[in-house]
Amino acid sequence: MSTATLAAERSGLRERLADYVELTKPRIVVLELVAIVATLHMASGYGAAGGPWGLGMLFGVSLGVGLVAASANAINMWLERELDGLMVRTADRPLPAGRLSPAEVLTFGLTSCALGAVLMTIAAGWPTAILALASWFVYVACYTPLKTRSWTNTAVGAVSGALPILVGWCAGGGAWNGVALALFGVMYIWQFPHFMAIAWLCREDYTAAGYHMSPVLDPSGKWAGAQAVVGSALLLPVSLLPLISSRTIDGVVYFVFALLAWALLQNASSAFLADRNDRTARRLLRVSLLYVPLWLFGLWLAGV
Image 1 (cartoon, one colour):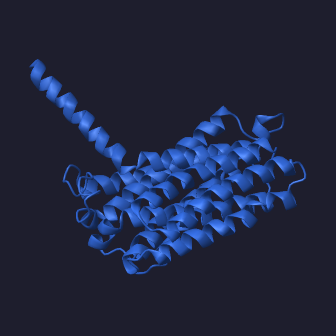
Image 2 (spheres, rainbow, N blue to C red):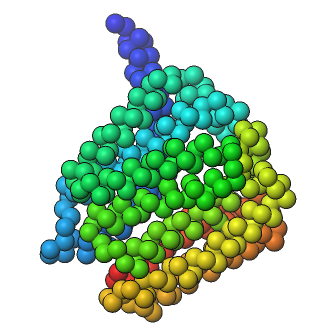
Image 3 (cartoon, rainbow, N blue to C red):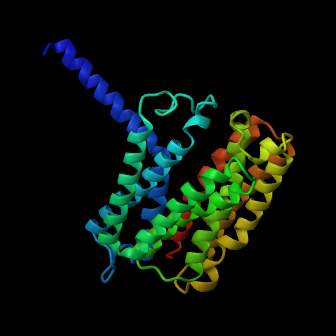
């Protein structure tokens, strides 16, 4: 085999691997893993004496969650392959571009889901795996088909986006108290301002694909802006739930961080509602991405 042929084969293999990585939506998976690992640490006392986790458990849960999340994203692309071909930002994905076949993607997605569930069951028990699979099911079987049928898709999809943080909490042996409720509630409500910014920025693509997103159904953006503002407003009382149920939390420290994170997001949401354009939407998107790590850092610093 000539050097040129060998180089071409290696290049083709790299491109093929890159396509499989693209199927997983790696940035979304990484964000999920950061939140999950952070809550696992908080739930288990950061590995202190008697804590239920070790490096093996941490690795097994992280890899398992990553595989299940990758599977959900891949199956989502498999289901939406024709619609992806109608949108500028997704037309070059592996399926609509023809670089991978539907059969390959379906096999990859189902195999990843099965392996991830097995790993989580071994590493942390079946309740952790059930939570991850519930998130997978809501995303694939409920949210994905609803996107072309009803504006309620955002409310349903937010359940899938909020469940993963409970995977880390469950794996770490955290109590099902106000802290757990706040974790789920904050991650659920946070997605409204976060996704309204995305939906506005992608409104032309969503219109082309026939998605029933708020800025498509209401091109003025007032509906999307109102959802962002209401969602941001609700985050403050929900995020303060740990102050009621946790006896160890430093209330002053936590309140300062929760209030700061909320104020930044509420300000960005209000600016978007007042003047709906790409600039304010991008600012809302950036601030929403800052909110979660800032809030989680506050939880950690306060000693949850």
